Length: 126
Image (cartoon, rainbow, N blue to C red):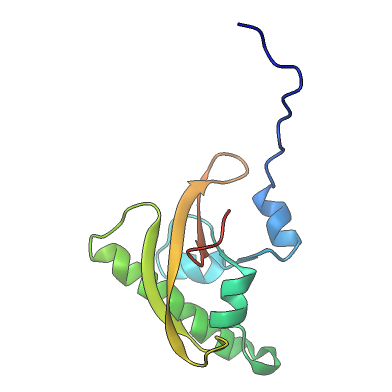
């Protein structure tokens, strides 16, 4: 069987680059305090809708992030842990106002093959 020399490999976008570019927000510090053993990031869309606070108030952002992570942890502890895992949480800044939304948590390989977790909307891709 001959190999097609026209086939191109699309380089994988490194997680560290996605964080540096603002496509992902690293929330590992708080996540590890809540018992998550792997690095955790949220997409910029989830950050804007569910976590971002007026005037960038870090106290409100921390509390909103804690809510998202606690809902994820509660869903995991309930024994429903497929990959990806869908869970609901409260979003404060959603265009429709304060609403419950479904998010998706995906465990996958990080830049060095280590397990990482990314929280996103169900229609977002890694």
